[in-house]
Image 1 (cartoon, rainbow, N blue to C red):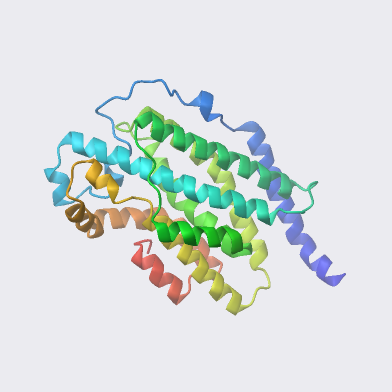
Image 2: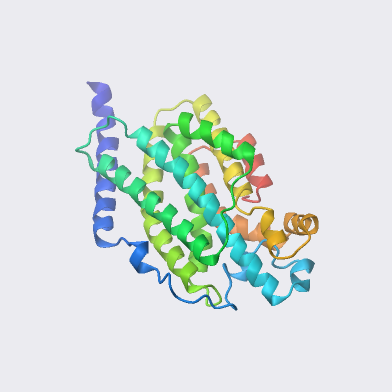
Length: 302
């Protein structure tokens, strides 16, 4: 009885958060099929992402590129990022559905979890259609990441699962907030970014609440394990965002472009900016241990 009473406030807080999120869903949600003008001609001068978010922006190689190469590269980069988004959203959907298996279907928490799954399914279809409209074939993660993803979606649970979800959502959120305002970005990308930002903000709130509750009373050892699992998921998400094939698609030497991107301090600074809120939250949760911090530094998230 005591244990039930001890958990009651946390459960009520979780229900309150989910109820507010459901109210937000009712007031502000989008259907990409009608919100995005899929038939609008693609302006050949507009980029796929703000040039400042391109992995080569600020390098000597970028200065050598023609404007057409820059446009082509940013379009392929956004499709690579969207493809990675689809990959992880499919993992996310399975983890959330597994987490809610045989839970109380009368709760707001259960209803919002299913709403999130529906949102993510629409987002994946939206990203897939955007890539198709751009005439760019999907960029898949590397083979190791695909296989590890199978294990992660099947085994990750509790704060480790929701932490991985939060990593993918938070990093992309900051990028897309810039893309949706970029006057030199394709209207289609601006609109899909706006839809994703609005709806993912609810998903991030949900993930944070789930993590806070599930971390209550956990041991230091469990937090250390979860910290490494979350950092590992961050490694595979971030490292797969921009497929090496995007450089060849823009007519660049693959090896030289990869070297330029790896040493691009401007892009490293942009990644640290996009990760600030995420890392601060993870620190507050006690999930940035020394091994995890080493991973985040390798990814230039710190």
